[in-house]
Length: 581
Image (cartoon, rainbow, N blue to C red; front, side, top):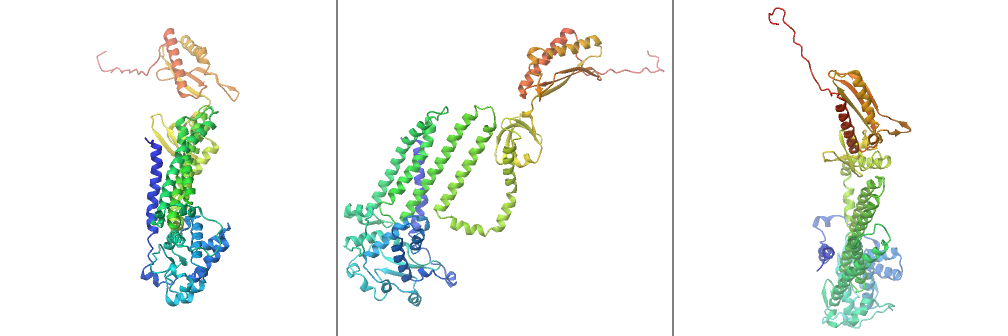
């Protein structure tokens, strides 16, 4: 039975295939030439190299001769512009150009001027489409091609057509690119050899010579039966590479981290190994795909599917590695005394993941050629961009506020702060906001921009907690007993269990406890007690205060000193005219 991750991997391949399949079908459908209004507009001036079928044919033949065997991108760009293949096809454009050159070589050594019309002839005939082979209507073309190849009894698998694009000029159209492989095989079977020496025989041709004849028939999308069989084999090999890579990478990760104290678990190793294995499977698919001779839009779409899986695997790998490393960092951070690394780990995790997502979006947009469509669209929204920039002011302010917090460190994760009436412990510090957990358990999210513009009281960094309280005794307490009570409280504060935490030294200065008779209150003689608890831990402070309170209560009860509570004496005045006493 497959595990969840294996099913997810299969779903990735299916999703990419589902995304690319409509593109593949759309590539087989010719685009409309435009409506009447568009045709009435003045067409832009054509590229001189593509101004007519003759110019395009000459540009292609000269360009491929200069570019073959060269890695000069400029020379290959001259060849590519004669072909109706999207730029996203990448290196597959070179394979299509080389195969088209082989097909033309097998048609014979012909004079381009005798088989293709120039600009004047094209304008005179108002041509928008010109068939170079086999139905060439140009005068003198019949003598250039061998009649046995164009006889009426021959069923051709494809045609070589140049179509006019109002913006780009004359190019070999997409249907021609799709028909190159079947047409090449058809010419080879009929003994049509190249009039030029070809030093290399592509692997696809070697395979084609050894497969049964019935597998050489065109099947679908310009691909022959044997190519579909090989494509299925490549898919199987890619899945096998994924399974094998999972085991190998998991073992390597365990070997690399085996000497670390925080070594990863088997589940963590598999979570990191699976995306790496998916990348391996995608690379195997892309490399083997180029060996079976697929060209044109079919190859472009299959390569796009492989690249999307590769991007998904790379994104998944980066995401898993980020979680993996951050988990190890979290374990290390828990063993340190400072909380700065505890504060930094979630921020670094979020930042890296944001970078990963942005990278993946940009790469996918570039792979499917979305940027060429989106960039002009965004350029027309200058006013909207201005509005967005104003709306983004708060976001930018919060981002700079987050940077300020990390640079100045006014507080850290785990410290208790008071800000604008909110009292809580800092749980997380992000680029945009900081989260506080209040004593009631509520989670408060405070924008970083507001924190940097207001005062923040950091209770967690106080060196000690001052306690200032009053003990009230009744007015009938004799002075001697009151003095004894004051001395008793001082003695309690000097007891070993209590003294240890209330004699703090701050910056070299000592702060001993203070006990004194403060005032005559309305209903009590007030003894004021003042001391500093040396630990900033609030709950330790509360426990210590409880011990002090209990000792004072016990001592005063032993001494017979009564605690005062609010009382009020009411005197009633006697009426002088009344006989009542």
